[in-house]
Length: 523
Image (tube, rainbow, N blue to C red; front, side, top):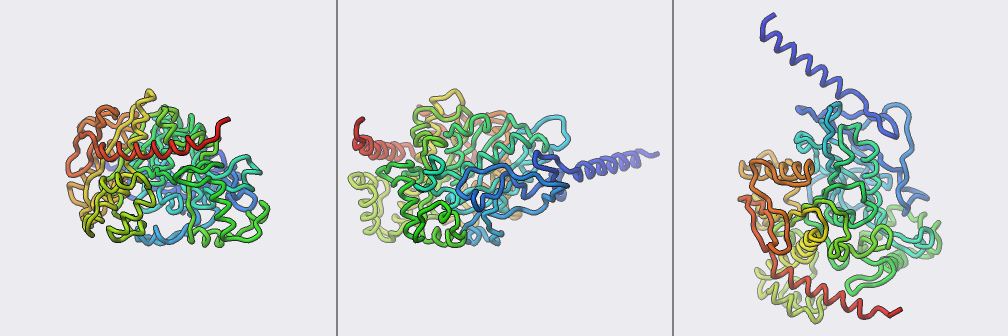
């Protein structure tokens, strides 16, 4: 037998063995599932795995419960339903809107680790979309590339909008608290990971949660919640959306937002008549609820004293979050894709809006973000959104790491969109780089940045420290030096990103919250 024949035979045997491994069903605690290989790779993908029972009927607005076991082998080759939402995000990203349903608690797994001796770190992706839009299997979230780098990648659907976050007096009477159902879905998915991920070659003792925008909000909230203890070992918050209005106390108004319960009661009363029992509340049609949500629903994480013991901003400030390593960062131009959400379109209207929103602090805001014409108004709106919706509490989250033993690392993504320079380094742009899912026509410079980001993210998942051989050094975050790693045309360390503006915003926040504290009755 010639050497070439031996080599060919060895390759053939290896391919047959690989195909056999790929064809083998995986045993979960709920039953057997069958995935499929990703063509041209050693990765297998398992789509549409139910991790909790459908939250329908009497299970609507309840904590998720275990999925019913099934007989035989369940196919995991098709993605599951997505949670109820409108078409806006699908239109923005150019994808067809998948089938929507209340039966939407599904996750997906990409892995190249089945049958291996070593357990691989697990990365659980939580999608963004303002807690009202999005799904775990958007094209940009394909986990093949990261799985090829040595992690097991999980992406998750969770309840959205009113179905995921409604607080209401009737629900409080039943369970003591309400709201946060979408976040509790995420906890259920993490519990599923603990029970099942070893079957995919993953390590349940090394789980990194990561997400962008509302997914970053979720990471922010989960790490601040006692419910995540033991389920999460590292966290990456990409552009976490944390503002004065998307955390609300259960039964008490803040200067920036009404109580979650009162907001929910008013919303139900505005759109539906005669809802005076839980039976009537749960009998509302999903499409009717969705239509009412589209007319206006202010989603918020509820500070309920149970899932969220206090406002998460205060928990980080006091160092009472989970003591785990964290990466957090923002993009230069977070605001450009959101400009249409701000109602003012002239410098005069802008000044009036700032006066209404910030009151006695309006002059300070106008000094920070001046606007005298259309061009400066564009820049002011972009920077105002970037700082107040994203950068301020990203830095505060990192500053809170100084109060625990684990390190934090800050990044600043500055690569301008090659195809849309007017948008700059826009909100969500870094996702494709971190996942390694750039367009086929991406430049060599973009591919190099993507390769570096994926390596940083994977190294962090493996070790709790993003620094890897051959990559520029990434300094750990220290409030005194305020260092970050810039991910842009060049990868380099820097310091003091937006420091002056964020310090001023924190001063305004402290003064605003002090009004609430001063108005609290004693006793």
